[in-house]
Image (cartoon, rainbow, N blue to C red; front, top):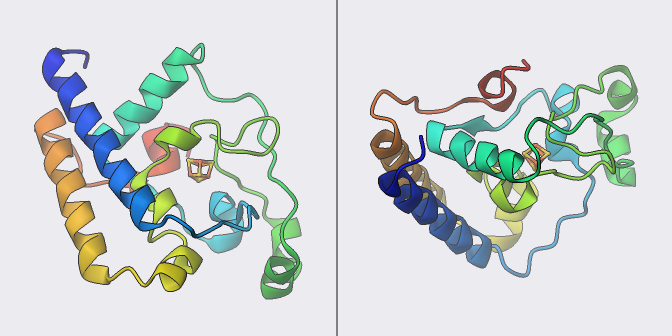
Length: 163
Ligand code: SF4
C-alpha cells in the first residue's frame, strides 16, 4: 500500500515509536542481541500489518530483500550463564540481523523489540503494563486503519514468510 493515507499512518507509527524511545531514554541495552535469538528465548516479537509495512519500506530503501547473512553478536556473560549451552544448540536468529550481527532495520524495528520483548528495559525504566497496553492499542488502531482486514500481530518470521 502506497497512498497519502498510508504515508500518514506510517508517520504516526514512527511518531509513536519516538514516544516509546523517549520513555526508554537513558536505558542502555547490553547489546547481547538476546532478544533477536528466538531459538534461545523461545519467543519472538509479533508484528501488525503496519509495523511490517514500515519494515518493508526500510528494506526497499536499502535495495529490497532480507540481509543475506544472519549472525548474532557474542552473548553477554550473564546470558551465557542464564541459558547455559542451550544457545549453542539453537541459534535460530531473527532474519533481520545483518552481516555484522546487528539489526538491519533498527530505526524501524517493531514495537515488541523496543519494549515488552525486553524485560530488562521495562524493569529499569518502571514503565507500567497499562502504558504498554495503551501503546499496543494505538498500534492496533493504526494497523486497522492501514489494513482493515489486518491482523493483531503475527510472529515476525511468519510475517516475513521465513518462519
Ligand atoms: S527486528 Fe531487529 S531488533 Fe527485532 S528481533 Fe529482529 S534483529 Fe532483533
